[in-house]
Image 1 (spheres, rainbow, N blue to C red):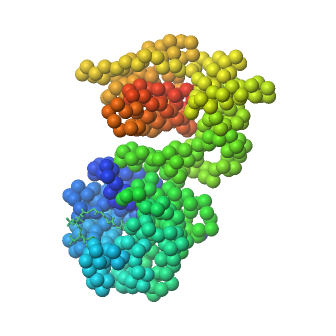
Image 2: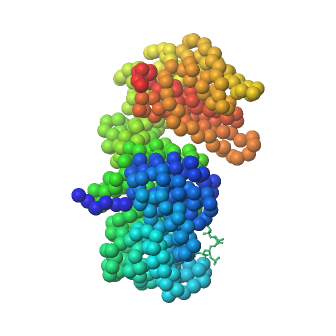
Image 3: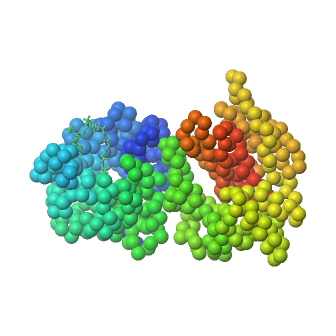
Amino acid sequence: MSEKLWIFDTTLRDGEQVPGCQLNTQEKIVVAKALEELGVDIIEAGFPISSPGDFNSVLEISKAVSNPIICALSRAVEKDIEVAAQSLKFAKKGRIHTGIGVSPYHIQYKLRSTPEDIIARGVAAVKFARRFVDDVEFYAEDAGRAEPDFLNKIIEEVIKAGATVVNIPDTTGYTLPEQYGAIIASLKNNVPNIDKAIIATHCHNDLGMATANTVAGVQHGARQVEVTINGIGERAGNTSLEEVVMAIKCHKSIPVHTEIVTPRIYNTSRLISKLMNMPVQPNKAIVGRNAFAHSSGIHQDGVLKHRENYEIIDPKDVGVGESTIVLTARSGRAALKHHLDALGVELEGEALREVYEEFLILADSKRDIGRKDLMGLVGKFVTDSNFIELGKVTYSSNGTIQAQVEMKIGDESHTSTAHGNGPVDAVLKAIDKIAKPAVELEEFLIQAITHGSDDVAKVHMRLIKGDKPYYGFSSHTDIVLASAQAFVDALNKIPVKEYATA
Ligand SMILES: CC(=O)SCCNC(=O)CCNC(=O)[C@H](O)C(C)(C)COP(=O)(O)OP(=O)(O)OC[C@H]1O[C@@H](n2cnc3c(N)ncnc32)[C@H](O)[C@@H]1OP(=O)(O)O
Ligand SMILES: CC(C)C(=O)C(=O)O
């Protein structure tokens, strides 16, 4: 069995330092429980001295979760450490994380101190923290830019003082993987008592190196990684949990394993994104909406023949469900046939070639080819009695909010009304009442394109039918209409044969 790699999640502390991402105590408890279910080993729950709200959150999280170690951050300051200890009083397993800056910049310009004094303060902080808990982690802030001999010395001294974990942050995201790996190797080779503590990585993404540096740290002997969901964190963010966990799972040559329940990754990512109002970039590794979407013909043909031709991770393994084949002007016949098959239209040979040529002309003029477009192309072969066409959409707010939607499903006209807690909710409920497939709306993102008051809203939706995801897009100056169109766009992508599935 390989060695255990401890997963230390700091979404609720470093992640929450992102402007606009602050959470209240109740929301933090929801996140902490999700992290517990995900299988993280340590939850850094906050920086208790920073505010009464953060203190209370650490206190309440300590009561709400029982498996992970709950960690509270502090400076190398007695008052901070005392408050951190109080916030952990209900934790079944509590850890104090204390430390101080160790680079020449931090020592001279931030702390206005000397190297000798910094060692003394670090040692005193660890000894003081050990009065309250047995599990004390020391962070050597800005270790990425520290003098190597000084870093080795302070780490040796804090371990003597009782640190059980030594955290080597690349606080400014400065190092390259080779350099960061060499820092960890130097600690392993030169600090006599290093085996008495676990070495932790804590990398920032200022140069886009956070994951690579973290993995390099593990390859050189680190056994705890400090990470956040979706890689959120101060400035350009922290190392992303999902990237490191999956890199380790994919590369058996790295002699460690984690206890992360990887199929929970996607839902945890979306929970954080939703609660923190922080969209996940579409091309984000593992959890971005394009991470398992294939849009060019050679790739699509390859994936359809054998998924692993173009996927190193099974999307089910991270909770995404299924890969998607997106029709574009770069698609080939294999992808077109795949989509037509899903619509119940089986074309081969000359008929397929004929439709493909028309498809290419259309795809050159349109970014996204939907079911209506496809049915238009194959109309002479088949009729689509399930296609939804959105008609007039009206809504009013007179005490209660009500929406009315006119739709055509195949050749039949329908009108539906519904109430909601807002116009978007009412309109989607009205559509849902008469649209045939029952779906779960899992993700709903509205983005302004230019930020002016005359802006166009861009809507992205992810619906779940059975266990498969379907995506809808739209943009409009009216966000209610854009939302309705995106919903119908996604509904129209569901193959008829899937309507009956749960
Ligand atoms: C690298 C990281 O990400 S660490 C986590 C960052 N997170 C935060 O800063 C959020 C929480 N912070 C806070 O709420 C506040 O900054 C507090 C409560 C910690 C301190 O507030 P204030 O007392 O008003 O100090 P202020 O924030 O202005 O300045 C920080 C002080 O801490 C000192 N300091 C910074 N890091 C450390 C440390 N690790 N150990 C000891 N002192 C430190 C600074 O030198 C500065 O001291 P000075 O005023 O004597 O120059
Ligand atoms: C407090 C430490 C671990 C930190 O966040 C950093 O150095 O980036």
